[in-house]
Image 1 (tube, helix red, strand yellow):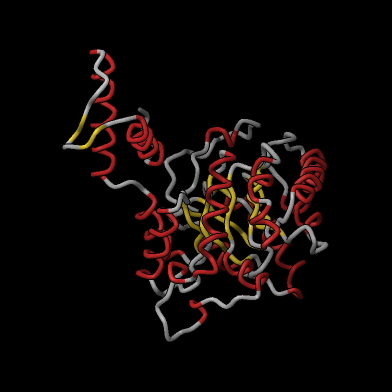
Image 2 (cartoon, rainbow, N blue to C red):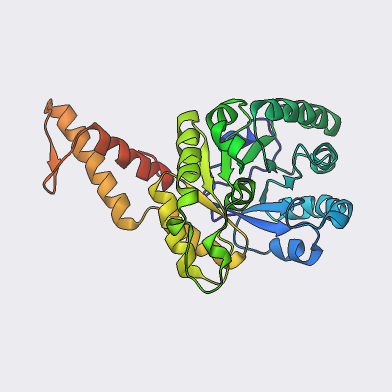
Length: 317
């Protein structure tokens, strides 16, 4: 779910995902709430995750699956980019979920609690069969794995590198905390704490971001559960950005603008990046090795950061 710069392709194509920019935010929509899914078609945000997992009670899984399958083509026609979240590989529901949602109307699937490469290997087999059955080009469906257990954090790099289908990954603080048996300060209503003040999450959040970067995968940060606290969300999003995340998941439409504003480079950042690259190009053309801008030496790390800013802003160099 996001305000993304790319355009939704008019025809299904196995190269479809190559033409789509990385999202800064994706919005969850509970799969057992048809009125919310219908409403989501009119949201300004583009990336959506119709959810069959944590937001759906165990007794409503089959009904949620039916509702999501019914709404997927409606949302796709509205120009939404869809990555339904299916139940985990250990739930016994993942294969049925995937078979149900598979179509050319989805960009990929999001799946929680991936812990190791073997699960990705088994997931790929399920996807290949489902794609073949649904008439979808094999390999077209991307995977957005959630890394949210101790095992997943330890295996994060290997998971991110395990399949070309994996272009995005997400850190899940809620399930990680549960897996580790640690409490979260955001659970306490008498505090304004965010994960910035949660020492138990500093290492895993950083480890997932670093692993994703090393694997060339777009890292998305955990949702901020206090959806009526925009300043708390901004603080947490800024922290995530500072350690390498490129976006953040949202659980409420009101969170999208805050997330977008944090992860979209500012006008001043873009202007400075353009200046850096212009000065660097001029210096190279003149054979000069030492250059500066506003009293700062411009070396290769500064140039690379400038290129990253323009990439994140969707601007060609």
